[in-house]
Image 1 (cartoon, rainbow, N blue to C red):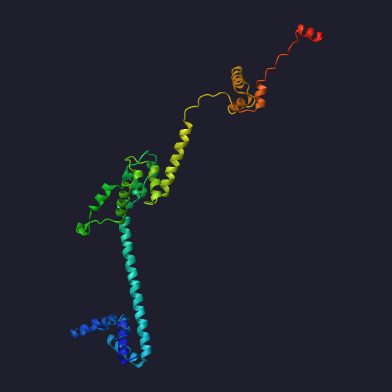
Image 2: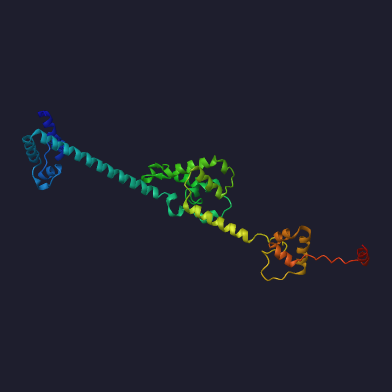
Length: 309
């Protein structure tokens, strides 16, 4: 390692230890003097640590007395520490900026508590408009978040006394506009009266938006309730012939019912009657027994002929 390399490492270490050395030298060239406390502050040390120039020269003497390899190691360690400190400070600044941006974003009207969607209310509607559907898919209340409200927000001035210029579009604005454009061009959503289930099915099929879990739950619940109510209020069925389903055990058959059963049995047979009325063939035969054929009586003439033979 050359003497020049060692000298460069020494200067690097001195600058690491006394980072404001160039400022002090500039002040000295300008014939300005600093007191002990100011010099100690410039050295990043304790104000009681003594004269800044004396400390710097003492460190230089120590480094000159060290082997070049040791000085190089100290210089490298100092550089690594500087890079680590710089990275830490940059990360802290970045985190601070992100926190400030998040606070600004959280304060925007579409992120306030009142902008949350009333999913139950909207799922009771038979249809949605395009703007209502967009807002609901983004979890926002259509009466609060809509194209007009978003445009009005961007007209607001920023900065001190409004000299900061108009408010810039945020990520939410771009997301809203993009989703709206996709829905305008969707064949499944061509009607101006969008069925809620059709909207959710389209979003899930295309992946254009993540359907809020509360929206899906609200719509499914209302659909189930509507289906139950429909079945309860459906017209009464047309009365059918008495069947095993409608007849309770032990109920007595009326003459009219038996006549109907008999007519069907005589016309279509015992098996058909059993299937029609939901009972066994044995039960049909028990209710409508077969007519016994009358015994054939022998004519007296037949008897005489038979005897004559």
